[in-house]
Length: 208
Image 1: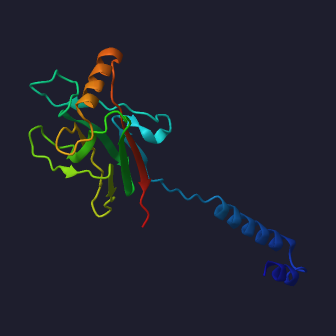
Image 2: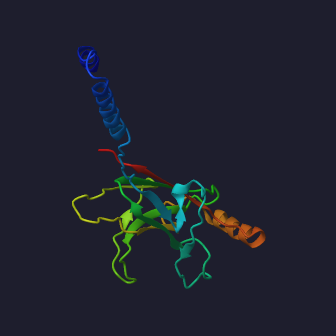
Image 3: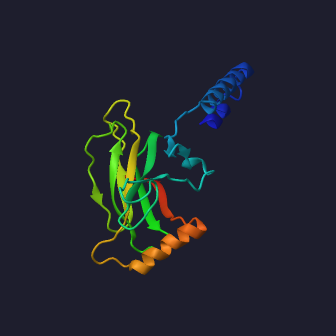
């Protein structure tokens, strides 16, 4: 259209043509330098106070708690011992729905009776002594979806703890005999023998 106008006024005043060109050029510059700004959703998750979303930490130590037993020294395992360890998760700096999955295995073929039995989800508002819901853990995997609620003004995920329970089973149907149990005690006496539980934790965004 601009070319057609230029042809029509070719024999007109030169100052008019310059004015039209200047006006067109000015509008183009204003449109081209306009800015659009948008914020990205936050994605930062702390596990036992370690930021696992920064790509720096791949291994975290969890401190086990061994339940007291009148017939066993404190903080050590023996047949019939029970205990737990806590996984503290802080998603308060996350602004999208996500899913977490925890795969738990015990890496010791010498103690097949040392098993993961159940877990609890403990809110940040928990007070010691309050009742805790306990969930049986048959497959060794804990998974849950957390939904970001946009209907709540200033919604924020709250920190929580996943408590994982284990025991050295010594009841009917156990896999180890007395000799097997004694072997572990001998190894502990000579080699400072320990057990290892692996908890592989993953988090992923949930899409609608």
